[in-house]
Amino acid sequence: MKTTIHIPGLIIDRKIAEGGQGEVFAVRENGKPLALKLYFEKNATPEQRQIIEELIQSGHPKTRNPDSFIWPMKLVELPGDKRFGYLMPLIDMRRYITLAHIESGRVRHPGYETLIRYCCCLAECFRDLHIEGYCYRDISKYNVMFSPETGDVVICDNDNVVVNKHGPGQISGTTQFMAPEVILRKARPSTATDHHSLGILLFMTLFGGNPFHGIMEHGIHIFDGNAAEYLYGHKPVFVFDPHDASNRLPDLPGYRHVKTQWMIFPEDTRSLFIRAFTSGIRNPADRVTDVEWVSAFTKLLGRRHVCSCGAENFWEPARKDQRRCWNKGCKVDYPGKLVIGDRSSVLIKSGQQITSLHFGEKAASKPVGEIVPHPSAASTFILRNTTGESWLAGTGSKQVEVPAGKGIALRPGIRIKAMQQELAVYP
Image 1 (cartoon, rainbow, N blue to C red):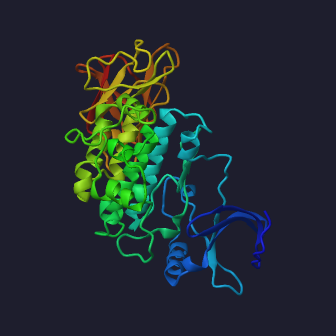
Image 2: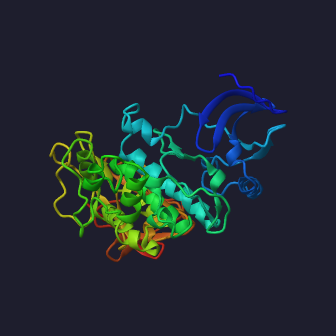
Image 3: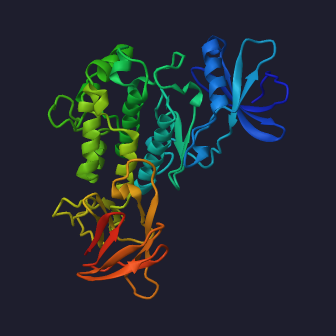
């Protein structure tokens, strides 16, 4: 598509997107492909320029994957015009999708393993952003993309990121993702309101619906701004609120799949969402944080198991009767379990990573161990010590040392002392 915009030093190839604030173009600078966002004149304000300049000066957050944030790189002036914009990395659209691709059926459901990895990466990114003192202000399904193969994340539209509670600008978010206190203009966007928006995005990702779209939303015939303010601001009722049944899911197509997918997940995962959208609605301090989500999803991945029918199931340590597959009612043959103190547990399967989060660490994840196949004993696995310290392992009083880099066979009855915790193996 041709454009009449001319900027010295840039070759503008095509227009690739347009939103409420401006236009985005694929460009080249010295042969390097980049993206350029140009603000519409009404949005090219001194406050927005200040935000961009500060973001460029500070640089993108220090994350596990620095490519996750599509961060402003350079301010761009439009000669003879009040408009301005900025350069940023160009996203490889062949690698990433949005939730809309899945919702529309253009891309098949990638499976829960990928979606949980995506949720974990997403929470990690916002944890790192918040640690550096910023709030995003506009977390929504429209501003993030992910790889359907790996779950890796890219976060777009970072030009409204500001210092928590203190930044300039008018952006407050996308209504259905906004915290009630922001919708009702009782508070400015903050880390706490980001936590609410993140919870909604995670719910949509895993369960395929909005946490407040139940009977109340179904009964709204004209969904205008007033209706949205009422549903998300004045009267947000979680569809699975255990104490308020006023907004249950209708027994209708378009809603049933949300309940089906909700029941697939373990109770401790569901309880986090219940907290996020019940007490977390009334008290922002009680919202589920990005740190908690990272820990929860890391542990959830370790309890995923694929049934012989192909359906993904999740082992629940607290449940006694869980051999029946949710999909066809067939028998699920879960492998052995590695129980880590009273903190968590994982299924014993090849490639399973054990991290400090499994041991109760609340901050960044650090590698502790990896489960790999035994080199000579079929159907037996080894836990390899990837820390810098030795472990003790054995049965009863007979103990052997497991130095860093070495492993111990995971057979029922064995106990391992590592990182001030006791690990036990069960069939």
